[in-house]
Amino acid sequence: MNYIKEPTKDFYLLDSRIENIFINEYMPTAPGEYVKVFIYGCMYAEHNLPMDNATMAKQLSLEEKQVQEAWDYWEKMGAVKRRYIGHTENMEYAIEYINLKELLYGKNVPEKREKVVDEEEIRPEKMSEETVSLRDSSVKDMFKEMERILGRTLDSGDISKALSWLNAGASSEMILRGVKYCIERNKTSFSYLNKIITEWIRAGLNTVEQVEEHLEEMDEKYYRYRRILKALGFTRNATEKEKELMDNWFDHMGFSMDKVLEACTKTAGISNPNFNYVNSVLENWKKDAESRNSNLNKTPVISQADINRYYDYLREKAEEEADIRKAEVYKALPKIKEIDDQVAQLSYDLSVALIKGNAEQEGKKIGSRMEELVEERAILLTENNYEMDYTDIKYKCDKCNDTGITELGERCSCIKQRTEEAEIWVKKELLKR
Image (tube, rainbow, N blue to C red; front, side, top):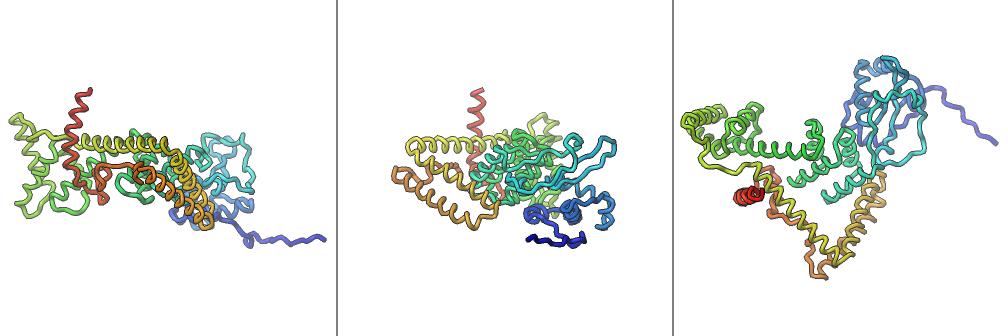
């Protein structure tokens, strides 16, 4: 006996599928008009029906330009690809919807749509770049290292966001430097990390070296702005005009922080302290120094760049010493390395479980196993006369982890001692050259 179901003849009574990954990871941050275009187009793609941008714009009460901008956006996000047809100047294109589950964690799904055009008809210079996924070994390594640095597993939202950075042009090395940068400032939220990486991408930074130069410049300026505003009694952020004035005092006029702060004290006698008054004081001092052919600053002081380099040296030294201690423990107790490797693998497995939606089922089991391993590690160390934190990184200052900046974004109280140490360190470095 055969069973036959009469097909639904009315297109609008059919159903269309939207992936939950799109709803949870892509839709919340996308403009509303772009979401409308994506869903409407998905309905026509689901049933292999024709639709053009002009008609879609009319039916969605949008301009055709907005529809085209929407496809630009979704192509940049890696959710669709344009497939160009023909070789004329104004080529037509078809929209291919990308399987987001495969994009995120590299699993093939059973259903695949037919190609819209033959590969020979695709115009390479018009196609979007190949997107990055978790199937790439380098990406997997990056996520493992991120979890190690952060000390926690990444959820699906974190992983999706990191993939979007890679697809926007960021390198794995640059992202890992961003994670370390946030940890150095005791910032572990992904929203803060996203702000940092996005800023670097917009600034056109491509290498770690460029990032380091950018950080050195921005950290120094950030400290300058906050310190001077505080000296003038302001609790707000500096305006762009005020930043230009302050940069001029240091970068072009050549004043030290001590001299600028001294100029700020001159505002105590006026009713409304302001930057223009301080600028006038410094300009008069500069003219006077030039007329007397003397130094602008009374005593030479070590530069902020030298202090930053010294902090970098302290952190690198602490990390190297931790690596040496870890190697020592691994040699004496090979079981510790086995445990550390297992914990790293379990951490990655937990991330994958989160992406697949098996966190509740697998998470407890993996978490329980990780706790057992951590406890076993602690017992092994103590039984062999090692402190439980023997392999941890040990910074000179626990308040700022040798960054000079506290969690509140303020200069750490260790700055005075580190400055004195930096002066000696710089002199030794010069003697080595």
